[in-house]
Length: 232
Image (tube, rainbow, N blue to C red; front, side, top):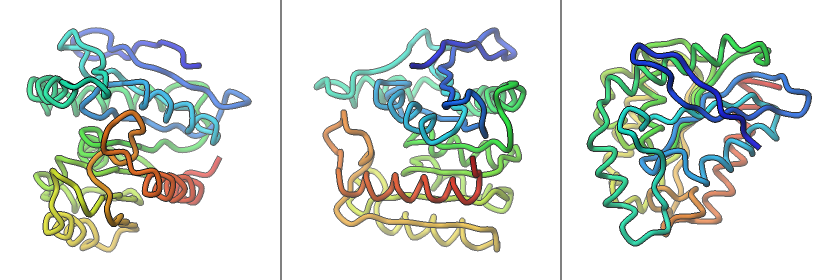
């Protein structure tokens, strides 16, 4: 079960979910949401990461919009989520995520480094945060904004793992290869994984694009990567 906590920002207190591992201490992971918000799926992934030994914080990045999460299984889910994401100020969202990372680092339960795990919208945000801050690890699932952020690639120094599906309805294969070329061009430790037949949001088991095989393989790769770069 998660605990509700607050993260201080320049505009007030941002709500967030906090999960603690067995023993209550461990390295920290900032978990950044999809366009659907901190949904049940994101909360399950938070619990999964806590079970792997991490202190996990998932800020509700739609808080300034007076919104929380969209039901991914609803017929209007994509339109509703795109509407929310379209109202999100990117620079402010990055600032809020940086504030959440600072909050996480300052928690007494965090022992060791801190990393970022982001999905979809959060995958791009995590990439941007990694460029302006100094996390110890970055995991980005189909970061939908990364193609527009490639000028930040030289500033991402953390070891990183990127996951992309090769049947992504929103990020075509040529763009995936452009991202691969940019993020691997600077001599930093980068792992780049692609998945045949997997669409966007393939890890989300509440969404119509869920791809069980790609999801399971990517998750095991994520845990292996975190085990090497941010050991518990």
